[in-house]
Image (cartoon, rainbow, N blue to C red; front, side):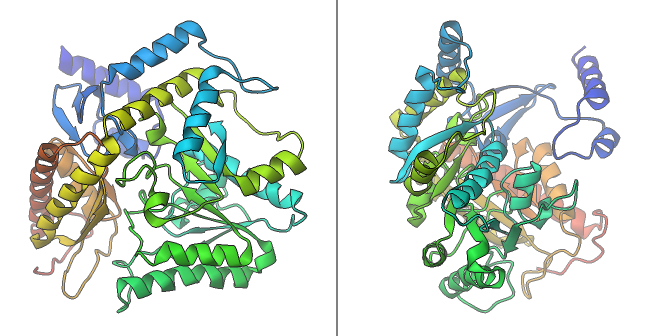
Length: 465
C-alpha cells in the first residue's frame, strides 16, 4: 500500500508541481521525486521509511535541527493571538519590533535598522533598490552598477540572478544591465603559483581594477558572501576581505555582506562578518534566521544608508504583503533564543573543528583533490588527476554521480559542479560527523568504481592516482 501511495504521489507531483532548479523531464525519466515525510534532529525519512542523515540542513537552513516543538508552539501562540497583520502604512506588530531589536543587537556594530522580506532573493532584491535609492538621494544617481563575483549566488529573481555569477545567467533575459562580476577568491581552481595570502590580495585587487574600468563615479556597491556557499564552498584567504574593504572605502563604494548561508552560527561565529572583521553597509539574512521553519528574511541596514534614506528621502515605496509577518517573526525569535541558550554557535565551532579534521582523512582518496571548509561548512573537491592537477572536462557528471551514491547510502550531500558540499545542522555531534564521513567515503568509493568501469557518460579515461 505504501509503495502504491508513493507511486501515485510521484505521478501527481510530475503532473502538477514544477520544482525549482529541476529538469522536470529528466526527473520523470528517473521515476519521479524523492518524497520526504518526516524529520527529527539531524535525520530525515523518505516515504519508504529510509532514515537519511541530512548533511545539508535542508537547504543550508535548519540550524537548530528538525522536530523542535518550541518553534511549533511559538507559531501556535502567535497564530492564536494575531495570525497576521501587515507592516505597511505606519503599522507594526510586537514580534516584528522585538525581532528587529534582537537583530540590531546581535549583528555587527552599525547595523541598526531592519527591513523584512521572505527569502534571500527578496532581501537582495530589496538591497539593490535601496543602494540605488541611496545614491539618488546623495546626488549621485549615476552610481548604478553593482559588482558581484563569479560563482556568487544571491538569489533567482531577475535582479538577484543578475547579482549572482554567470552560472545563473542565460535564461529569461538575465543578466540585466548595470551588473558586473569579478573572479572569486578560488585558490584551488586558479592557475597560479601564488601562496594563499598573495592570492587573496590579487583576487581582491580585481575589484579595484574593475571599479577603475567602469568608472568609480558609476559604481554603487560590491556584494559578496563571506564564504561562497552555493558556488562551491569557496573559503577566501585571510588577506582577502581586509583588502576588499580598503578598496570599497577608497572609492566610496557600499559593501554588502550576503550572510544568508553563513549567518546565525554556521562558521562558529554568529556571523561570518565577525570572523573576517567585515564592516558591511548592508547585510542579507535568511535561512538560519528561522532555521527554515517559516519563510522570513531581513536586510540589516547600516547607519550610513539608513540615515540618508530616513532623513533625505520620503516614502520608501517598497515592501511585501508578508514583510515582518508576526508568526514568522515569533518563530525567528524563539529560534534565536534556542541558538543562544543551547550554545549552538559554540557547538558549530567545536564540532566544526572535528569535521574539518575528519574531512582531511579523505585526502588519501584517489578522487579527492582538496578538502576545505570552516565551522560546519565543508567541501570535497573531486578531480580527474591529483598530480598534475586536472579537473573533469565534463563538469558536474562526476559530482552528480557521487551525489546519487550519497543518497543510496542514506546521506544528503550536495554537488556543485564536481565539488561535494556539506552544511549540516548546528546541533551536529561528533558521532554525526563520524556517520557522515563513513557514508561519504562509501559514496566516493562507488563513484570511483563507476569511473574505473567508464560508467559515467562523457568520462572516457581516468588518470591513476
